[in-house]
Length: 96
Image (cartoon, rainbow, N blue to C red; front, top):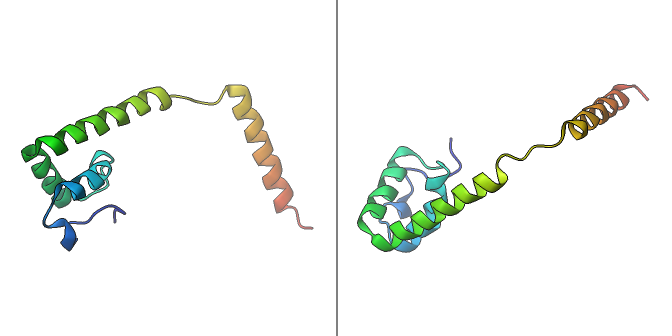
């Protein structure tokens, strides 16, 4: 079950702008069920202010993903970490 908002949340039944703004990241991260997503999208479709805020947050999420999403550790570091992990596991598994 998702940790996000649920279709059965009573306070989510009657959306106001503050609730939508608070839950925009749940929508962007796909952390709400289909019913909640539909209600959020319905509000966004009819509220220019919330729709604008959603657009800004979506662009921010895309920017962070572009700038931070593709980084990976250098191969030398990754290999040293693998060796350290193997050593730690081997040491811990040896009866004392």
